[in-house]
Image 1 (tube, rainbow, N blue to C red):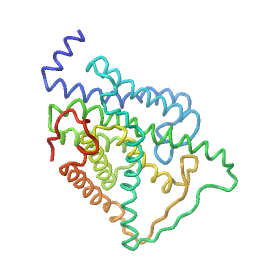
Image 2 (cartoon, rainbow, N blue to C red; image 1 turned 135 degrees about the vertical axis):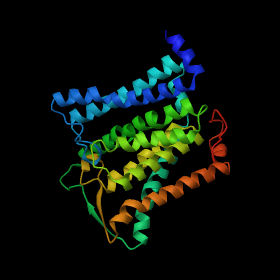
Image 3 (cartoon, rainbow, N blue to C red; image 1 turned 90 degrees about the horizontal axis):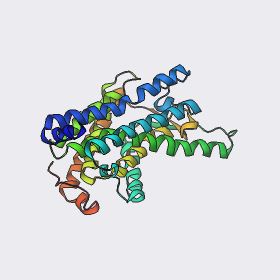
Length: 302
């Protein structure tokens, strides 16, 4: 029966699209049973996301299981539907180089808005979060979890399911812009499950997703976009983490002297400019030069 389905998958584009979208949704829905079990045990996962994430055993273990389930769904699809290894999704051997480059780019990408705010008259105040009473070994232990168990793990979960898998499976069959748009919408909407809708934040998320999708498509390196995602989140949690030192908080940053509109929408224009810059770099052969022999098909999008 599975062989017949594979034949149908190879022959019909509609089956490919529906299958890939279902796998993506299943990889996200895999968290629901864990969330339900956690609630029965008195663990509130929904109320402990983002900067509100509490570093307790129950929440940390539940978050780890969510990542395992998400990755398992993708792995099962690769093995039994596509008959391909997980490494096909861009797990190149240049882990450290791509990760270092991506992390630095992610930091720059997130920080540009605040550089813009500063040079447009914003007043910036930094307040140290870490108490002098916290032993160094205690803080370093929490920080190690924050860096590996939260930053990397969160980015890995989202990039393998929202970017690498759908792009790799559909890029030969439909215009990649359609994939980027669909996954960008899913990625953005998903972030509002536990928070109120804000158009500026939605557009920011969508453009972040689109840029990560473009870079993955051009480089075929999942390590690069995982690190970029992690670098962006590192700045957010280290300097805008709402006093949560157990989750990497270093300083609380307060900005004054900028309008609400500027705060919500200035970064939309910055990210759009970055998106155009990424396309420009590709057209100039940057990715073919520095990420050689990685794309399985020629880059056809401009």
